Amino acid sequence: MRTSGPGTSRTIAAVLPRHAACARQSGFSLIEILVVLVIIGIAAGMVGLSAVAAPDRRLHADAERLVQALAIAQSEARSDGRIITWRADAGGYRFERPGRRKGSTGSADDEAIPPPDDFRDDPDLRPHAWSAGTVSVTPSGPQGWLRFDTEWMADPMQIVLSAGGRNVTINRDAGGAYAVQ
Image (tube, rainbow, N blue to C red):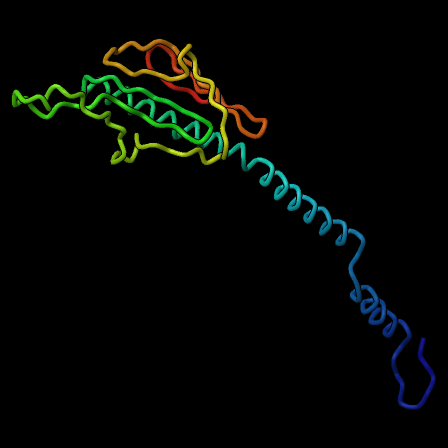
């Protein structure tokens, strides 16, 4: 079918497909909009979950760091021969051991008890603050502290760290292996 008019030799069939193609390209389809909305929803959900899980990750990281420090303290107590004590409170934890006498000169100063070693210069056993903020610590044992001595076989123990309504448990078996749960 031909259109009428001077100098026009195009058919209507040739004109319509070009206009239909332009009409289809002028906006987004419903499927494209839905796909974008789903992607935005997934991204927002991941951001929300990571923001909620951040305190839990910090508490778990504190537990992992503590497990490494406890294993080092046990090894240090075995190699040095002095008992190491671990104490914790809501702000952090620390290790201590009795001070070592330098040498005997026979003076009255030699009889004085040396100050305890608090590991201030040791990167692993120095006092640490909790990265999860205020943490409630429940160690096994009636004293509320742990003791590492020269024995190769240690008593099983459990430490529960609690912060922000979340708990992480550290267990040590009789062989000295630690696990964070």
